[in-house]
Structures are given as C-alpha cells and as structure tokens.
Length: 222
Picture (cartoon, rainbow, N blue to C red):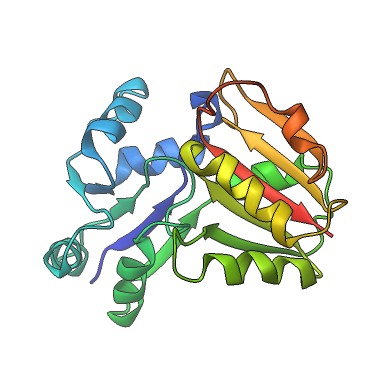
C-alpha cells in the first residue's frame, strides 16, 4: 500500500504562523522533502522536529522525483515543504504531485501561509477575482504580460525581487494608466512588513528612499 504525500504549508516569515496540524504532520511522516535542507533545518529545529530531509528544488532532476516515489511506493509517508509558504506555488512541487497522482498516491494538502493570499487580503483591492502570475519573466514575454494587465478585469498579483522593483514600477507606468491602483507588500509577516498603497502616479513617492530590500508582492487593479 502506498504512503501518503502531504503538501505542508510553512510560515512565510513569522514562525508563529505555523499551524498545529502542520507541526503534527511533520512529526509523523517518514521523510520531509524540502527546497533547502539548511533553511528547513532551522524551521524544524525551532519546533523540535527530527526527521530525515531530502532536498527537492527547481534544479532537482528526475532522479529526485523517483527517489521520493520509492519512499511512497514502499508505504512511507512523505511531507513536502517549500522554503516558505505553500508548496507547489511558484516552485517545482507540482512535478512531484503530478507523479504521485499518476501512481495513485493520496495527496493531502495541509493549508497555511501563502504570500499571495496574505498580500491580497490586506491590499485594499478587489479580492473576489484575482489573477496570480508568480514571478514575471525577466526578458522574453515580460512586456507583453505587463501590457495585458491594462485589460484585466481581475486584480493582478505577482512577485518581484528587490533589485527589479524600481524597473518594474517604471514599466508598469509606461504601459498602464496613471490612475491604476497598486499595492506593494514588503516582507510579509516579518518585522519590517509594510504595505504601500496608491496609484501608479504616486506610488514611488510612498516608497522609502534608498535601494529596495526584502521580498515584494505587487498587486494591480484597474
């Protein structure tokens, strides 16, 4: 009988956001597949969870998927976690999930923190319908995607790195209307969490001076 694959959400910053159920599952499984064993090791040490770790990230090959499937097929339960948030969202987790489902392995979600939903919930923008884009392409297709936001009937949500934040705002101002509503969420759930809300016309004035630091979620609404 196959083991179970648990998709376990972990905190995106504040460790207090770890759920009771997530902790119980991580304590009960036979193996934890994670993006970075060092990073996840810190989380597990904080909660006194001692389980074998196996790295599984965007550069992992087919051999890693097969290795995890070997555990599941011999009856071991496996938990998959990402460096932060919900696995399978902007990480390679879906590859393992697809293979598990193809092999009739039960996949069980353990919900918790997600930067997309966290940012959206406090953005002040419409939340009934939204379009999540992950990270925008660095080059190919980037301008086309940004231009398409002008016609979106949904709140558009995407991630951005600090070293591209200023460039992205300039590109948004180039292709979208000045009165387009924008919310920028920085370092969600962490000590320096901040929300900057306004329009493309005035958002730069609201951002702190100096080189951007941290992790950002950008939300756009027409």
